[in-house]
Image 1: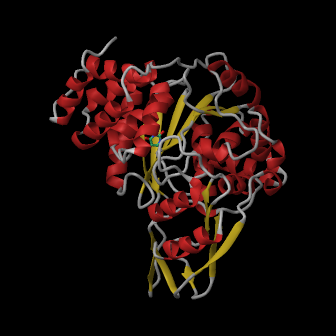
Image 2 (image 1 turned 180 degrees about the vertical axis):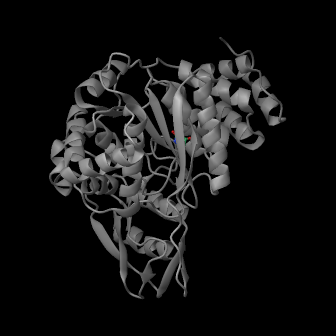
Image 3 (image 1 turned 90 degrees about the horizontal axis):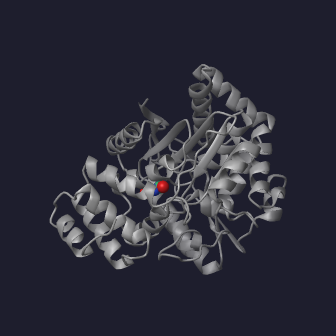
Length: 438
Ligand code: URA
């Protein structure tokens, strides 16, 4: 398929008109093949961001993205197969724990992940902070590893959804990320390209998410589950809380260390709860176990160290240094400067601008500002309190991990100004707002 003059597609969307599925598909295919330059694709993204895409356009975009590469058939895998994806959050290390945890429960996780996007972290960037670890698996490598180890986390490549890889990087650099159809097409193209029996989505809502309200997150969840249903795929989406960092680590190596500690049975509150919830949901949907039974099995796997062993096998299979599970900081890159963050007033933590924390971490070097920017895997923020906690003035609430003193000094007031304190007690927000899809 070829696009005549890409400017016709741009002009139609600029003027708020509906694109014919074949024109949209031709545009995306042309971009994925390198025939349409970045500047025209960026103009398309901005027009789509502002004008929106209706259901048939979103479907056409998703289909063109899937068809830009090969699909990965998993029919030969002997275990029940599942994929899980987050729409993006801050200190959201669920995937790092979920994949090995589900594998340790006898499931097979075949997952295409993304890089950091906007202020949010990306599983690929986090995993690649482990020395040697590769995410550019071919479809054949992905299937082999899933069968052998029970889980694999890979990137979009020129073989698998290349159009998402290219559009994703451009969206990150052009402020066109928080759009329901663009997120839905990006997430679902990666999920539909890999033919698992079950897709689980973690659709984030709150200050650290692209969807700031549970209502918008619900629309995104329903858009994604509708795309899956059109494809005849089974998909369940949970809208979950992102009104504060989920775990404590906002960075890359820091997130890996947190995942190792979580999989070692360390207590990590809401991050643990959500990881167990998704693994339990997968087990119960795929094996018919009751929900309570699924969650108990997931919690037991975490506490017994079976999930951690599965993580070791996954890291090793992807070329990473497996000693990361025994002694993370002997292997992971360490930032040269560490500066404590102390609360500047007493009170109950009432709200956190998690996006501001994500941006502060990006500015330390943990994320990208321009397409192709290198990231610094060692830097980031550890932020411990949760909404509802009582803090005392001067209490240490976290640590900045920075490349130099100036960056660390600059970051502290940014963290403190992201916090809202109350003189009265505050109820923690619910972790899960609801489930959608079937
Ligand atoms: N995750 C993705 O894969 N794509 C998005 O657009 C947002 C989150």
